[in-house]
Structures are given as C-alpha cells and as structure tokens.
Length: 96
Image (cartoon, rainbow, N blue to C red; front, side, top):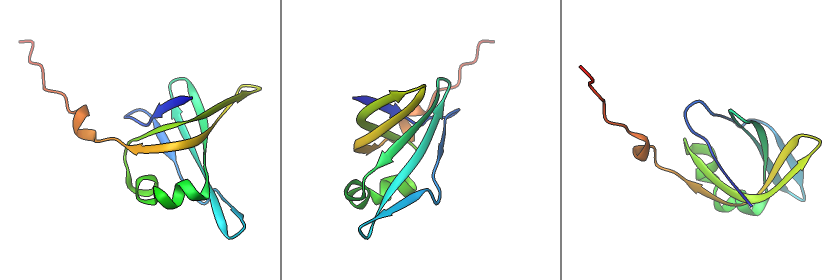
C-alpha cells in the first residue's frame, strides 16, 4: 500500500486520459514530486463515488496497490481522500 499526496511543488495532471470499458471510464492521474512520477489508476466505481474529489480537490491522499516495473511506478487506487490546504498554512517568522 502507498499513500501519495499532491502538495505545493508537486504536480497532478488530469486530462482526457480515460479509457472506456463497458460504458465506464478508467481515470489515469500522473502525480509528480521530487522522487518522480507515479501513474495513478482510478477504477470506474471509485471515480463514481469520488468524482468531486478527483475533479476539484487541490490535495489528494491516495491509498492503493503499488507496482514498480522497470522503474515505472503505478498505483491502483483503492481509496481517495481530500486534504484541506488549511493545515498547510504556516505562520510568518520574523527573525529581525
């Protein structure tokens, strides 16, 4: 299992990368951080349950099965959670 988070300095790319299967779509996200890119696979059932999170959340926490084959990382998502950006607010430090 892996947990990946999209955060400032990290890019999450969504787009027309969907594959149709029996009238449903698999969604593919590319998440990138300082370690590289992970391809996230979201099943049609999970997408239907979490459509708003996938399309509108700034930050996502994903849990799923990790596959690393020939240096290419894939995560089949089992669960998606939206994270609040309020937890990222930092107080200013005045050192003078």
